[in-house]
Length: 185
Image (cartoon, rainbow, N blue to C red; front, side, top):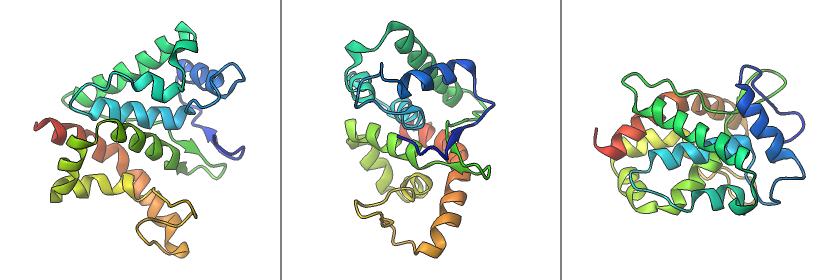
């Protein structure tokens, strides 16, 4: 769940605001993802070259209890991501939280992305072991922290904010390349 000081980008579509309102409400399943996590998760589902049939259960914790309107909005977002990534000139607009100071916060999005990778790790492992794939995955992976809140890349506290900002800015550029790389395009 996001902290109260984080907010959504006000330029988001009404459908995303509606989806966000549901995910934050008491009507949503207790262990469902929040909007930024869900967007990263859906993006990785689209990038994965093979089908992930149980993605909705993982995203919502209990997809059967989710209203049809919410499933429709989620499917629309999935299809929009797919259309973007498969276009000739993809322009990915990930749903990041926005700090009051105006900078993007990509951590939850990246965590959602990684959760989808875990559902079908084989193509991702192969991709990430190539020098090109590893380089493309770095902006996402740099957002990973251990249970004690330490960077898994050993970033010092002084470097974390700047490194996360640079990595977050790179995500919209690298994800279309990841999508193409996983498909051999």
